[in-house]
Image 1 (cartoon, rainbow, N blue to C red):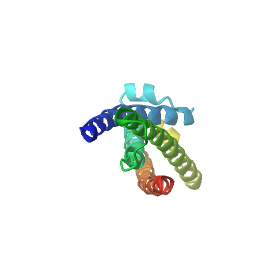
Image 2: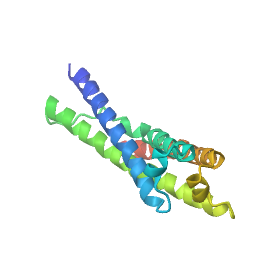
Image 3: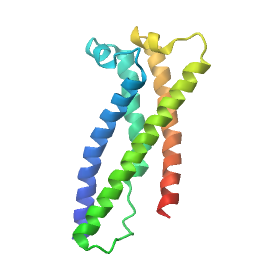
Length: 161
C-alpha cells in the first residue's frame, strides 16, 4: 500500500512541478530576452515566438525528465508516511535543481549560438515573425535539452550513489 501511495503522490507532484517548471522556464526565458515582449507577441499571433517558447517548454521537460525519478530503494528510517514525505521533498529538490540546470543550459547555448551567427539578429527576426529563425532556435533549444538531460541524469546518478 505504501508503494501505491508513493507512486500516486509522485505522479501528482510530477504534474504540479511540470506545469510550474514549464511556466518558470518561459518566464525565465522572457527575463533573459529584454528586447522581446514574448507575451505581447504571442497575443498578436507571432508564430515564431510561439515556436521558440514551445521549444523552451519541451526542452525544460526533456532536461527535467531524469529529475522526476527518485531512488525509492532508499528508505529513511522515519516511518512509512514520513519516509514518503522525505522522498517527495527530495524529488522536489531534484526538480528545482534540474530546472535551474535546464534554464542555464538553454540560455547559455542560445547566447553562444546567437554570437556565432554573426550578422543575423535572431531576436529582431523572431519579433518580426520570422518562422524560419524560430524553427532554427527551436532546434538549438531541443538539441541542447537532449544533451543536457543526459548530463543531468548522469549527475543525479552520481549524487544518488
